[in-house]
Each structure stands twice: as C-alpha cells, then as structure tokens.
Image 1 (tube, helix red, strand yellow):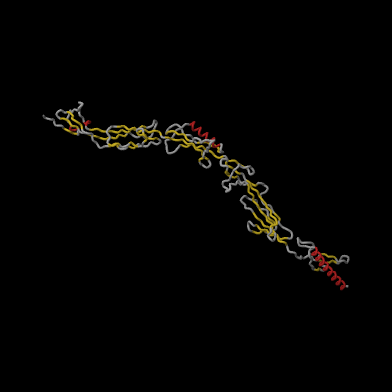
Image 2: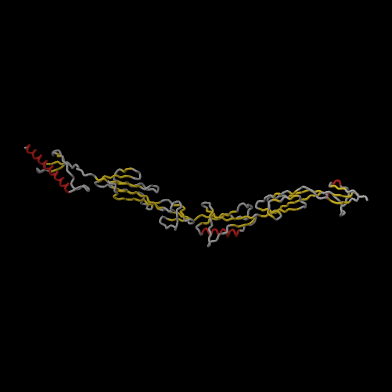
Length: 428
C-alpha cells in the first residue's frame, strides 16, 4: 500500500497554495507566526493638564512548523510555538502630587514577563495623593512657632485639614480651626494680629504641608516704679531673676580721728527709678524704660563743710585715690545713672598746745600823767613781750594755765613802769 510523503516546514513562503486545515479553512502565514503583545495604558485624573505618558506596546514574536500532505493538500499537524522574547520591565513616569497604581496595585513599574503567550493590556492609573493644610501660630517678634498648650480642661486643638491633590479645602473647617487657636492663645496673653490666606485647593507637593500662619504678639504691660508687680515676675537677664526698678547712687563721707577711728558716717544719695514692661505670656521682663530722677530737685550730692575748730582736716577721695585740698567736700556735678558710688574720708588731727604772739604793748604818758597801754606810736617806747592766750584751747586749756599767763603779764607791766620812772628822774 502506497503512502503519501509528508512535508514539514516553518517557512510561510514555502507553503503551497490551497493547503487546508482540519476545519476546512485555508492555511496562511498567520498560522505559522504570531506576535504576543502587552499594551500599557495610562489613565490620568480628570482635569490633569501636565505631561502625559504615551501608551506603551511590547511585542514578542513566535513561530511554528506545519506538516501537510502535498497530495491531499491537507494539514496533518502543527509544531510547538517557539520564541525567545520577553516583555521588559516598564517604568511609570512620576506625576507630582499623584500616586501611580498598576492594575489596581500601587507601583511605579510594570513588571517584566518572560516568554509571554497571550496578549494582555495593563492599566496604569494615577490617583491624587494625600495632602495637608496645617495651621501654626507664630510669634511676630521672634518669628518662632508658638506651642498651643492643652490639658484635661483644654483638649488638644485640631490644626490639620487633610485632602487630596487638587481637592477643595473646606473653608468653614479652616475658619473653625483658626478661631479655636486664637481663643486659646489670647486667653494666655497673646494678641491676635491676623492670619495668612487659606488655600482654595490642596497642592500637589506631598513632601511638605501647606501652612497657614496665625500671627500673634505677646501682650506687654507697663509697671511704674511703685506699682505692684505680678506674682512670680522675673528678669531673665539677672541671675536671681530680680527686677530692678530703683537705683541709688551714694556718696559716703566717713569722719575719722587721727587714730583712724570712725567718728561718724554721712550718706548722700541720688535716687533713680524706671518703668518695667512685663510680657504677660512669659511673666518675664520684656524691657525697661529709661532711668529717671525720683526727685527732680535732687540730682547731685550737696556740699559739706567739714572744718572743725582746733583741728586740721585731711580730705581723701577714696574712690578716685586723691586728696582734696581745703575744708569743704564740694557739691557734685549732676549725677548720672552710669556714675559710680563715691567714698570720701575726712581725718581730723588735733592742733598742738602752743604759745602765740600777742599784740605788742606801748605805753602813753601824755594823758593826766598816768601810764596807759596802747598800740606803739612815735612818742611811746615799745616793749616787746609774749603772753599766753587766756581761756582754754579746745580740750586743752585749764584755769592754772590762765593764772600763769596773767602773772607773766603783770610782771612784764611792772618792769615797764619801773623803767619809765627811772628815765623821768634822769631827765629832771
């Protein structure tokens, strides 16, 4: 029995005409070759106006052989499809403010497929990303963010509105947030200065929030020198926190004897005062006013006469290390807040007991033949003599000293009278 010779080929160009397949249809080139395609499509949000990525197609070519009977011109069988192509990984270009999803799963690439056998379509969809509008309080003076306190009685305030890229910001919600923040902070002593514009839509930047600044400055209260200060108020620039509203400039005059013993001390003062301005929020000094004289009529240290009968005086300016000549501590210049305090020492030294010259005596014989004492003249003979002053020197004189002095004076007068009498006898 004769058998027909079978022919096998995978070259479509070598196929005879009118070869029929088992279903009766004609054999064509497409029965021996095929292309498997992956189509990647991109779907963007409505209203998106940015750059869009074009559809991507990826093909893999396959072929197979066919065996047919050249006599009956019928296909006997087909071979296995063969091919070496792959669908390579495909990158999805980022769209700012949106998240990419590949066939419903968040992804930024379309995976590689080796030796695909069926056509397929992949859908890449971009969905708007999550965005935030955040409300913050700002101290206008420092530019720093103000912490919004909360506790059991004052719960934490909402400061964030969430939405999606391109979504509408809820203005009523935003206004309620602002009012709550302003209410909380003004109760603490902050003064509301206004706020920035609330955005109409959410932006497309997921790396940062859209900020709405609510501006404040701290309430500053003025306190005069004699006003009562708030409890616990402090000056942060002083180590002990003391608030200084008064400053006294003092000149201290110290009186001493020759043994350096203090006899008495006199203090002269000029009093300065100033206002203080306290931050109500922090209860701390914000700043001070200028120094002013408490008494406008007392702006200097007055003059002091330190002379003392029977004593020498030495005046030393201890502060400036110099000796002051005279018996007066002079009035100072107008004292300024920047001037330093002054210390003056006055030292007394007792004068020594001494015999001092008296007025010279002369005797006048012209009146009624009686000798009288008077100042020297041309007709009267001058007699030099020394007498001790009568009375007591401060803390040194005595009655005995006075009596002695009187005796010496009497003796001198007697001698003088005797001398005059002898001269008259000679002349006669």
